[in-house]
Image 1 (cartoon, one colour):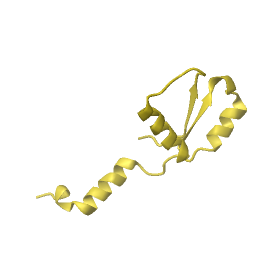
Image 2 (tube, rainbow, N blue to C red):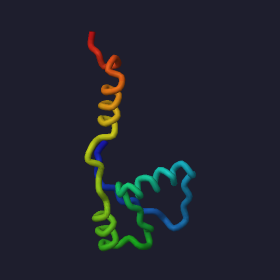
Image 3 (cartoon, rainbow, N blue to C red):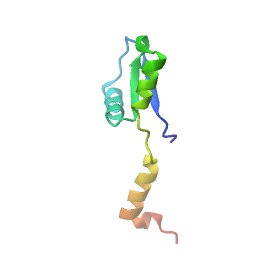
Image 4 (cartoon, rainbow, N blue to C red):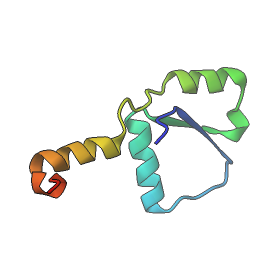
Length: 79
C-alpha cells in the first residue's frame, strides 16, 4: 500500500454503487482523499484539495498483522 494522497476527479454525471459511495465517504471523512468535479478542476482547486489530505501513516495490513499476533500468537509460532 503506497499511502499516498489521493485526489479523484469525477464527471458531473456518474453513479457509484452504495458500497462504493460508502467507501469513498469513509475515505473522505477520514481525510485520506478528496474528489473534485472535473468542471471545477483548476490548479488552485487541486492544490487546496491536496492540502486537505492526511495520508495514512501506517500500512493497515501491518496494523492488522500486529493485532492478530497479539491476540492469536499461536498463528505466528515457528516450531
